[in-house]
Every structure is written in structure tokens, then in C-alpha cells.
Image (cartoon, rainbow, N blue to C red; front, side, top):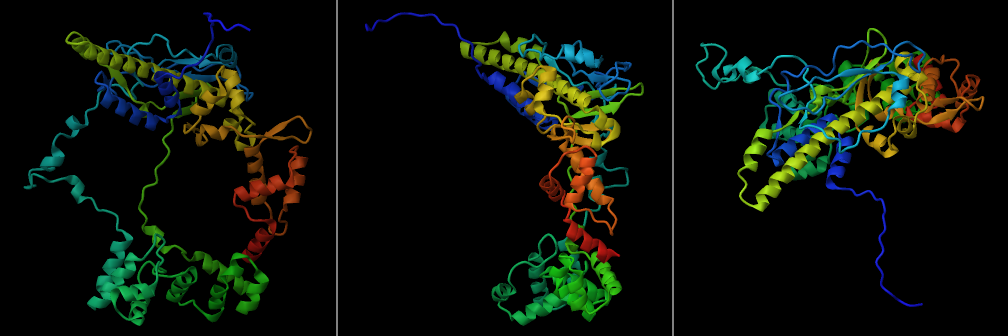
Length: 527
């Protein structure tokens, strides 16, 4: 076989992950808040990008006023789903409001293809404003905060915020009591050291022997100071164990009798709901034991948590959904959290005419192309999110109408096939995205649940709906008729749900519901 050289021409197709395409994919995974931070970083790096100063001024709302009438949805009710389109990229001199158009089931299934990323868009990404008219906080309040609220304030640096009272921390609360109740400077120093040893729940952490060695004093003196500070408010603080925490609170109520002390000495029996053993060790009857358990429940096992003033960060929805008066659902992006970006065409024309060499020309061109691609990616992201959210609402219509027990099985492939996208795109869109619905705020991933076969072998039930059904059965069980896992399986099969006992146990444990034996003990103690 002879070795020769030859020239062949071959044509192949391949997907090249360009930086622009990687950026578009990355934007799909970001929530609206993360997207706003990303756009801020891009504005810092690109001199041609800028925030629209009229972001809260002109530009209309996130939707237009349109009627919502359509074909019946899958839930068997009248009305369709209206989808509020994202704000189109338009020129800053000719901004347009977001258009709202009706999407019936037939319309949606007929045209579900994704718009190409290289569509010719203009150079403005706008999210639409929430109200007409501009608002300038500086003009509204002027320099009042820096000059004082009236002429009676002589200090020119007066600030209204300085008059606001702050929340008292646990440390400040305890130090105030320490300064009043303990006069000896050495004991006060020991008390400060004990305060520094408290954890978030108010328990003393660390070794008292090590503290005695560190402070070079007798262990008995530290223990004496500990007993004194254990009388501080809140009751139960400075305890070294749960048992001691409960003892302190009961002693303050003057309810620490021998029977209650015996119960505290056997907390493991109380945790196991072992009524027979508790009756024996406490030496009381069933009625007294029930009263003792009820009092234990009124105690605070973590007394310091009431001083935790950290603000819980609420979830900001990326998608808004509401029922229209004429029927159907209206779905739109949360325009309050979307960034509004402009490309400064005037500045681009100015610097383009003043370039002096090839490097500057390439830099300006690259920045302009990058800005244009960002605008196109933002527009494509909005279209994709709305398309996915609309199809989710369409397929889970009964959930929004009747409740969680009507949540149907749904996987990524179902949405991808309905809207003509790849499963990976749907997965990225539903990651870390939340939708505000009439039934609460849910992550888009919540609506995707596995299916459980029906008893007839044909119908399928959502795993989330089955978990809800199990919880409802357990919540409604009477004390004299505690349901075992096997009994729950029988009830579900009679309702047409084919489920194994181990699956019921798995769902029950995931919801932190104790077993039937533990529930029987707990309810018998409450009687």
C-alpha cells in the first residue's frame, strides 16, 4: 500500500462554545437579583453601557391593559394564560412599553420554538417601570437629613437615624444586670468571662477549670459567680446542659419538686415517650404526669434565641403570576428586580471619531459588540423564562386552582418537548428561580415531581401530592386509632395510589413525622 499525500474537503457541523454563547447560558441560570449584580459589573467594565436614569420614571408598566379571554385550560375551567412579554430592546429615543398578549393552549403548542440568539435587536434592554413619572429621592427629601429637621437644631451634622433606638443584644442585656447585681470587681470580671463563653442558645460552652486557670482564681469562686448569674434574665441562661436549663426555669417558678426532678434526671425516657417508665421513676399517677409534661413544654430550651434580631431574608420572586378578573392567569417577570440597561450611542459615535490607532479602534469595537450581545442575551433570557413559566402554569393548572393534592407528575422533558427547547435549557431556567403565585412563592423546581403509579396501572400521581395525602391522614388520625404505615398503604391503595410501605416510611421520615409507636405514646401523654 503506497503512502501518498492528498487534499480532501470535508463539511461537518459542530457547536462552538464562544464566550458570547457561554455568557448567554450563564445568564439563564441567574436569578433577577444575581442578574442585577452581574449587569452592574458589566457596566463597570464597559464604558458604553450605563443604567437608565429613568428606570423608575417613564416607560410604562410591566404589562399592557388587555383582556384575558381564551380557550379553556387543561384544568377544565374557562380562561387562558396571558404571558407578559419582556420589554423589547428599543432605542432610548423611542422606548416602548411591555406588550401583553394572550396565549391559548393551541397558540402555545403551535409556536414554541426558541428565538435565535443572533436576532437583530436594538440597543436598549428595558424592564418597564412600575409607574409613570420620575421620582428623585434627593429632590424629595433635600438636605434635611444633613441640616436638621428644623431651625431648632444647632448641630449641622444632625442625622435622623441617630435618634432611632437599636435592638438590645444578649450581651448588653446581661452586662446591664451584671453591673447592678455584682459589685465586687473580681466577680464582675468572672461574670464578663462567663458571658463571653455563651453560645447562641445561652448555654455556657468551654471548661470552667480552664477558665479558673486562665483567670488564676479558685474554681469554687467561678462556680459561685455562675450560680449568681444563672438567676439573670432570661430564665435558663448560663446553663451547661438542657437539664440544668430546665431546672433553673422550674426553680424560679418554685415548681422543682422531687417528682419533677426525677423527670429531669430521666429526660431520655421523656424523649422516648415511655409513659410506663416515667410513672415508675416519678412516683405519680397518669394525670399528674400529664400536667408535668405540659409544664415542661412551656419552658424555653434555648432562652437566648429571643435576642437574635437577625432579619430573615425573604425570597424575592423572579416571576409574578396572578388571576385575571375575566379568567386565566397573567404571567410576567418581576420588573422591579430586572436591570434597565442602555448603550450610549452618542458616546460611541464620539469616541469612534477620535480613535488614533488600530488598538483603540479594536477596543471600542469589541466593547460595542459586547454591549450589543449583552442586550440580546438579556432579551433572550426573558423570553425563555416566560416561555418555561407559562408552560409550567399550563400543565399544573389544577394545582393553582384546587391545591397541592392535584399537583401532577412533571419532568423536564415534558416542558422541553412542549416549548421546543432542550432539557438542559429548561433545567437552567428553573434553577434558583422563584414564582409568586396565589398559593405562595415556589421555586420552579418545586413543580417537577416524580410519578407514583395508580392502583389501576394507568393513572399516575405526583409524589408531592402523595406526601401531602400521607400528612393529611396522620394529622387527622384520632388518639385511639393511630395509623401504622401498613394501614396508610391500605388507605392509599383504596384511593387508587399504588405505593409500597417502605415508600410511605421514607416520605414520613422526610417530613419528620415520628412512627406510629412514638405518636401513640405522645398522644397518650397529652390526654
